[in-house]
Image (cartoon, rainbow, N blue to C red; front, side):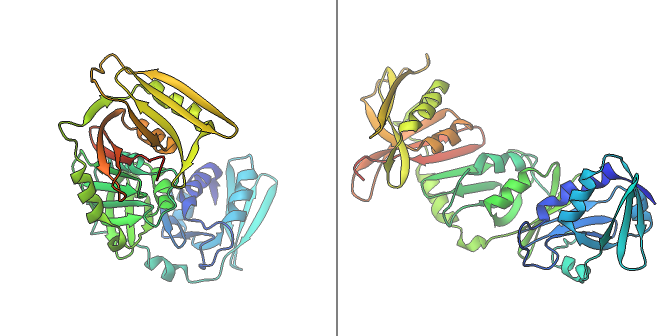
Length: 363
């Protein structure tokens, strides 16, 4: 049979997140599985199912599993689009492209039995909020190495935290999600999966179906271990108050913070820079043994508050994170365990809140 190399490669690329790189421990985690008119990949954390839009392979019921690395690499190196695909009698595929040819030996394992554990129930799909992907992008942290890393979903809310900041997103459109928790790595891969329309939670896997019938499945974490009640309580008690400073940071501030980061100081195992907020300006500074940095940034024309100078230390990475989501903030003061009052930010957008702690130079 003659098939399109480009169409086949495009399908393999979509299925790639389920391929285990390195030394695969799970049997079949390094394979492309062709079965039932679809390409499957799966490992311990991600499984992908891509409908095969290739008439010959589907019509003739081609099935089998091949090593992913070799199969994808050799197909990528050809230039012609037409492939002559032959299923041999000795459990292999013979593929010709122009004057070249290669043979792929099929892997010998019961992939159908393995796929049963990651196959969703066709009757239990539920619609997903239209802004589901936006919510993940809003809450996903760049580098969270704590036991609380990942994204937690519950009904119409998404949460994430590293103990120093909390991100909460509320869906604005119809639909909701079941309760589950997935890793940051799975969230990163899910962000690349387009046009998700439906969701299904099944035991320890959560499945997402795209408009074209592709399915992206993620192994969940133990949602009972996520401190959701503590986080929600903290967010509720941190709701802006009438006497909190309410303003909008100028965009130029974050450029200054980025420059000051070259001389960032260390407090509580965090790299920090100093901010001093006063009625007419924001002073940005940092110093270390190799040098120091200082810059003054004016408030915007809409800033009318009269305040006593407030000194705080902030993590540049945290500030960069919230700056991409909202410049509007509330500033309150909270008491630490040592009894010291320190400022705390609540950044607010239409559908999200970002609670961020600051640091004390004497902690």
